[in-house]
Structure formats: C-alpha cells, structure tokens
Amino acid sequence: MNSLAPIAAPTFVPAFVSAAGGRACLRFLEFFAANIRNPHTRRAYSRAVADFMAWCEDAGVRSITQVQPLHVAAWVELQTREHAAPTAKLRLAAVRHLFDWLVTGQIVPVNPAASVRGPRHIVKSGKTPVLEPEEARALLDSIDVTTSAGLRDRALIGLMVYSFARIGAALGMKGEDVFTQKRRLWVRLREKGGKQHEMPCHHNLETYLHAYIEGAGLAEDTKGPLFRTIGRGTGKLTRTPLPQANAYAMIGRRATAAGIETKVGNHSFRATGITAYLKNGGTLENAAAMANHASTRTTQLYDRRQDDISLDEVERIRV
Image 1 (cartoon, rainbow, N blue to C red):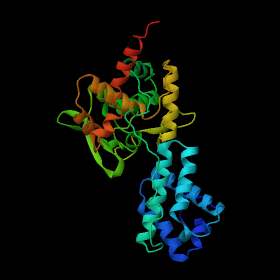
Image 2: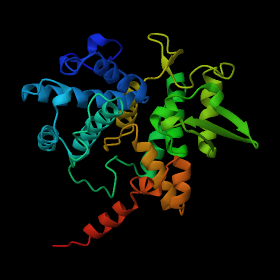
Image 3: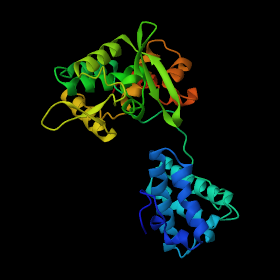
Image 4: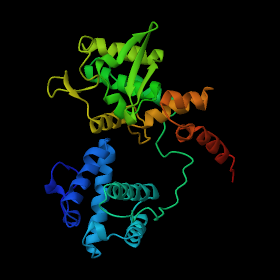
C-alpha cells in the first residue's frame, strides 16, 4: 500500500478506499488535504490510518465500506499491546475522525469506530523532562555568544523559558514579531489552532533578543524568519527558517556542553519556565494565560513542584 504522508493526488489512494468508488477516493483525500490543517496532526493521522487499512486488508476486509465495529475493536486491541495508551488513543481518534468525515460525505452509513472505546489513560503529570532553575541558568550562561549561532541559540532557549513558547511558535516567528510596546519589548507568537498570542519580555529575554537581532544584523529584515540556519562554512545566518529537528539537535549539544545530564528536548524549556514561575508564587490561572492554554488542567501537566516534595520525602527513608 502506498504511503499516505504526501497526499496530493489520487495515485496515493489505497486500493482499500478506491474499491468504494471515485467519490470515496475524493472524500478520503479531502479529509487529509482540507479537513486537517496542522501538518503534525496530518502526519500522525496518515500513519494511523495507513496502519489500520493495512491491518484490515490482512484481515480480509476488501473495502472501506465493509469495516465493522468488530474490526476497529480488534485493531485497537492490537494497538494497546504494541503502543502506549496515549498512542493507541490517538490512533483510534484518527480512524474515528476519518469515518466521521466519510459519514458526512455519505460514503458510509455509520461510523464503525464511534462505539469502540480506547484504553484508559489518566494523566496527572507530564513526562517532559524539566530542568532546575540553576540548570537552566547554567545552560544559558554556558553558550558562547561571540558568534551568530551562539546569539541565536541563547535567544531561542531564552524565549521558550521566559515566554513559555512552544518550539513551533518560536521557530515560526518573523523579525516583526519582536516589537516595542509601552517601552518594553514584546513577542508575538502564533500558537496551535492559528491563535495569536502576545507577551511582554522578561528583562533577561529582552537582553537576549536585542543582542541577537543587533549582533546578527536582523533589525532591518522584519519580514524574514527570526530564527535561521547557519550557512555551511560561513558561520553566518541564512534566510532559511531553522527546522524543528535542527533545534532539537542544537539543544542536545548545548545541554551536553553545559554538563547537564537530564535528557532535555524542545518542550523541556516551556515546562521549566512554567514550573519556575509557579515556584516563585505565580498563579496557575496566570500561567495558563501566559502559556496560551485553554484550560488550567493543561497547565497543571507542566507543574513539577510536586517532584521536589517527592524527593524530599524519599530522603526520609533511612535504613
């Protein structure tokens, strides 16, 4: 079966779908091309749907119109054995949303995934590794800012720590998204769902951004990307936006150079900033607003103050 990731033409429609006719093919493509706007969601849903259809074909189901709740339930059971509960739930959601789309398009009469329950999964705390404030400070201070790369990396990490920015929103910024308002530097972030979020800068972040923009000569290029790749052999910034994978690799290198053993990633600094804010008396409601969370329940996943209590209590075990 062909991969669904680069959906752009009917040649990528699986035989499992094309067996239901031309209208089914078009509706299937529209689900990924028109209904799902987020590229990360589209990629994850594509993988899940491809896996489900391959399983159905192996099970003898020849058309998408022949899928029954029993087929979906059996596939979900397999997912719970091979993947963690959140992954299994996400994959079921992909199949469920696809069939919802096919039902409204009158390709199938009912959604066979609607009655299938996913695995139970209760989350009280996130799994993202979080740094202590001292570690975050050591990491920022360890960066050599005599180069454009160093100025860029400190500004990017500082942005995530002090504004709780998601890596995708940070890398999507343009020069004009750093601006002065009320005698203070502000940042404009375009978060998930197309939501625009503006925040004043912490004084450290203000210093980092000013140094980066001025030191790298970006002040006049307001329409270009704020965070850019470094040209090979030149050491100078290009006009190519820094990819997320490159940012992840950079963070790993910087953390290792700073002697930090915690396996941090792009999201670690958002969680680090939120936890530090709450430890210093910040409120959950304000943290949610600053992080652009729709609910404080999401913000609570980033609150790791309980980790300190747990560590203190563990040390009471004296044998």
